[in-house]
Amino acid sequence: MLGFDASFASAWLPAWFMAWAVAFPTVLVIAPITRKIVDGMIVRAP
Image (cartoon, rainbow, N blue to C red; front, side, top):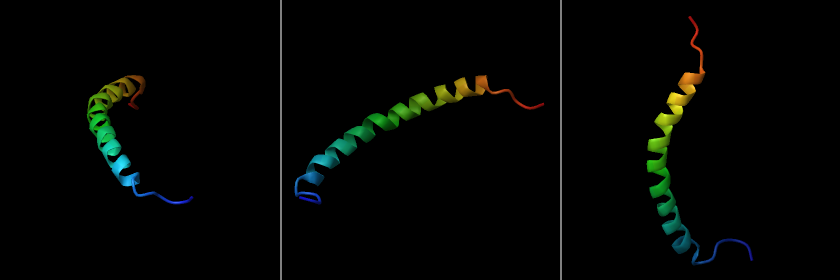
């Protein structure tokens, strides 16, 4: 059978919100650390 069944949205939406609640704060913490690491690896032009 092709397509979504009736329970798709009720199963997907809570999972999406949970993933968003974990991913967004993780990015807020990891992004500045990654930026500092990359800035340390790059040589600036004079």
